[in-house]
Length: 402
Image: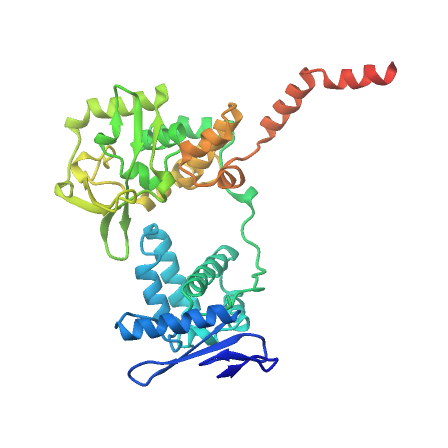
């Protein structure tokens, strides 16, 4: 029988350590000992009973000798495997390049805040604040899942912070009304004009626009449905279809007259476009809502490169944008800036933030307001003039004079 710090019995295989945690030990049928630490005696007793039951019935339970490497492999495949492909790619990249070299071989139960902090310190000189933040989130999510599944009693990142600044919200690029006008005047002479203009009318993500197929367009109801994405994987050199970024990214967007005209003109001229043999492919992906397999028929894509007859790669749009910006005499921006610009114009037009959240496919209104809505100088001036027109200042002045 183990005892607590006051000398009272805790039960077989359980004792209280000097740091206050309760150690629970269990020897399985192969003679291997397992030990875990808990905040309370009931938690420790429950674990011992569950471990005994699992061992007796040959169920799987995780040993305390599990390394961070082993847990990461299980976690990435079985716990967060349904996240967006880009998110999983970021987790894997940050783990292999930054987290694994420091703590990968350690037993997960032995990882302390100082080890997690060391990961971030090593990144400080060579990585941007946003990349360090990715590593911070990856570690935090990894260990949170370990704690929820009783591999560890305490989260080893409690109290750990990163200090390198992440790019400020105000640094995120969007177009002023003047820049937008100058850009569109130049872009109108390019073969990608319809793609750029459609994002400015709908707020689509680049992958959503590239993966748009005709079955997602309802000309009668004048709507566009977002239910898949398409991107080119440069490392593997193939096209990959996938679900939208999150559950909330599934959405149906009412078309503006301009968006409707763009899509209708492409539909009417679709038989004259060049088509590559690549378009004979049908790509499969998992629908987040149902867990079933869906298909993207490449030949049904709305946007095809006029010269190659294939979808235009994500990066090629940015390269083309830079040339147009130089021609228009405005600062260079990337494709995502068009989405930011759509959100800013929407708020300036008086659109309610909750409506904009739905149109952009955001899970949180905070994301919509903090990262996608930008206050321009013109909108500030307009707001002040609108406030002034209500005569509130005159009311206060008259009250004082009376």
